[in-house]
Image (spheres, one colour):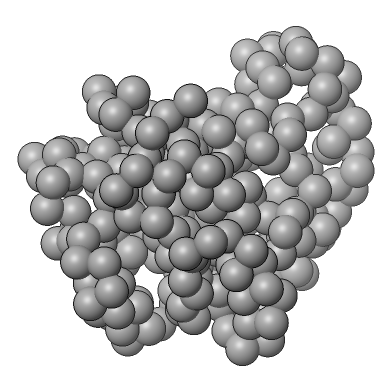
Length: 255
């Protein structure tokens, strides 16, 4: 539906073929964008590279977003390879597994720090590195969840981190607007991803969403990918600092 020919997009957060990052990368590629995709470490390299090679012309880069030197290195490589950047996708969220079980009040200091460093500060670091490459403006997008607004049992510290992420989107949108760089977040409904497996009673969450959502089902990951293509395109040129809900309407319901 949207033509991204001639544009360059980098996607951070690929884990496997079920990840939202993959759906976003696939959608951007189908729309015509040149794609660079990062994976976290050598342990994830084999599956990530196999997926990336299935997208013609896509290139793979290793990047641990908790390491500033890694971020600087990858963006130097992107500059050397493409000379510019039009779209940045931040599909990253992490908290230690122990923090997603039991009661929120038992959140550890270190678990809180890790969740915010990896899930929130990484967007600031990536946006700062990407901005100089977006000479003609650009689109930055991240992934959030309804647990940023309302209590979702077992989501715990990730809900607090997502709330901080959504606030970060607004502050970045303000800072980068003068450069014609837009910053938005997609709030997706629950999807069976690798990260979701760590959330206690995730199957109950899926069931509850499907029962209460006006569309009577859970969102498909490719619907999130299509929304990412929209946000990367000129069709969304007047949208920044916003949270776009792709959750089959669940978030509008009171009970």
